[in-house]
Amino acid sequence: MSRSIKKLSLQYNQINESNTFSSGDIVEGRVVLEVTKEIKVNSFFVKLTGDAHVSWSEGSGDDETTYSDHERYFKLKQYFIQERTCERNTTLLYGETCK
Image (tube, rainbow, N blue to C red; front, side, top):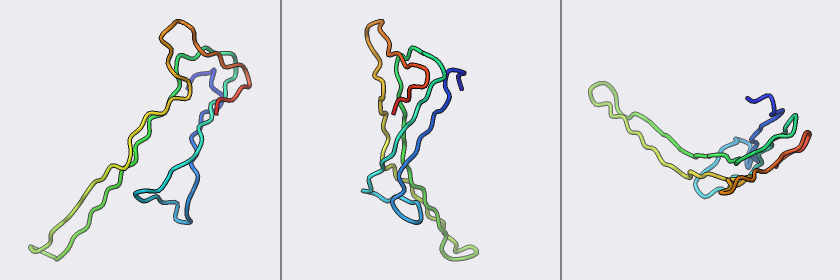
């Protein structure tokens, strides 16, 4: 991680005691970027993917059959600082937090 970055964290809000999500659930949270000095930023984004994998076996010995499946729930790219087409960048100041 760059010396200019003091903290970069991704936190999501837990929606149940087992800390799991199912299809149709809304995932909410926050991304925190804190810098140690003034920096110029072209863009700042996160890429998120939500996948589920399951596998189980039925029967035994020569009659054993294994089943598996995969499902993608979401794949997204979220910009916090949009890439600019001109030469101007966004400036983050020392101690400033981008949320």
